[in-house]
Length: 467
Image (cartoon, rainbow, N blue to C red; front, side, top):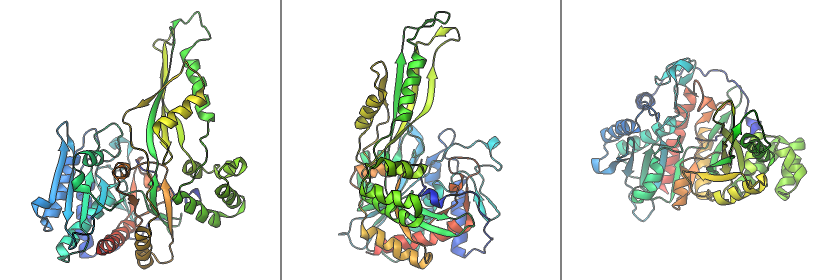
């Protein structure tokens, strides 16, 4: 469940296919690992993250990891939602470890809807097609492969590296492995910082590399149930007090309500750089809004871009609707789910209070829907993190700048940040202008983007671990 856009100015539609390339021996080994992971179904309905974790664990032990350094975990109530933590010890115990985090689970995919079997890795016209090739099995495979290569090399880095492959990121009401680890085995994932999904790179419609992104912060997700109730009655005798009408009025109020524009350190840098790029009326409005977040006219212009609008504030939107109990009866109950993406530092309770004020109807109940996630805490724009990422990028992607961004969605990083571990969504794997069909049909990933991203992330992890 991830928002990977960085700016609408960088988004468009379709790309030209990449040309096929001969693989190095190490790339062939990686491709086999990637294929095995992709073709292991890890949907909530019929899949098993536990199986996927076991297969990745077998890869690690074959690379030389001791059994004691690979820990499998699961909740007895959710036997198919297991994961693993692997530890590659460093030479300097005084340095806190770093954590590589990736999720194994994927969004549901129906074979009848897809052009190809979503759980068979298909390489076609320069792209890999399958569910999860982008979200998030590319990163899970790269991180597993990185740990295996580092172990096989025999060289001992200074910093210990922990790898956590977890389940439940894509489904808010399911067992979540990252949350379980923070509550039950924090010792396994204790780290100075963590690298996660959420960053990446962007290609233009012609396939040219446009920009890299380091995710530094994200929103929190919270659902609310708004509901109206009435005694009901016979539909032949309608009265003004109608649960559906009252719910409709409440939904109109939610649609019209705007949370105030705000900035974090990350989004200030993001908008400052974007403002210089876009220029014109939008650039001027961005500059004005940075100076005064309360400037309504500037906010209106900047918020005409949906990505900018969401980056600036908490957003709430109706996503589910129900009401009534019979065709010939006045409704006794009507309700809707309101999905909110909460700006860092704001709470679920303060967001609920804002909805209460916006709806302004005591007959409408507004309740938090479990699970309740932690408050989003943005990590610092730490030069010890940003510097190495930019330095390695100069070698792998010369001339492509790195832009810090805040995700308008959410990842499992929010659970780690609640435990005091700053989480960064790393650059490296370039995405198409339509975000590769993640969560949708025919998810794909450019073949060259996967191998180039693998090389970049391997060197980046080595650099972080050497300091």
